[in-house]
Image (tube, rainbow, N blue to C red):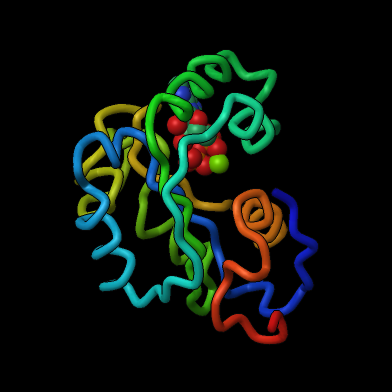
Length: 153
Ligand code: ADP
Ligand code: MG
């Protein structure tokens, strides 16, 4: 699904995905509580099982990496929950909340440190730039599915 997003509020939205290990371990509610307790507003949310094509498209930037094939198998192994989050400085604030990619290197109290098993199965995705946040939101959501976003309705 593709959406032409405008450049409104570029620096206050990010895309989270609760990954298949999160849904498998029944951690959806706990992890979303961390988002809300940290002041993020939920502007869109759905539960889906990624197709292989969708997962490959989402992670295209990593297609030459040695872990790419395993990443696609993992991301298509069960339900995911993409979530559009809004907060001032959302991308950076959310990366701080989730912690480093490898939970062994993540700061105490971060979501990956608390719940992730290893560098692959690390519970949650977070966008790494404002531009990528808009592209990633458009990968999963149409405009109609996004609520209360300035200038979009
Ligand atoms: P992040 O999710 O922190 O932005 P990357 O964009 O570098 O991390 O990688 C995307 C995802 O690919 C990671 O979240 C993880 O699931 C997986 N991954 C990254 N590096 C490795 C690795 N060295 N071995 C296995 N899986 C990895
Ligand atoms: Mg990344």
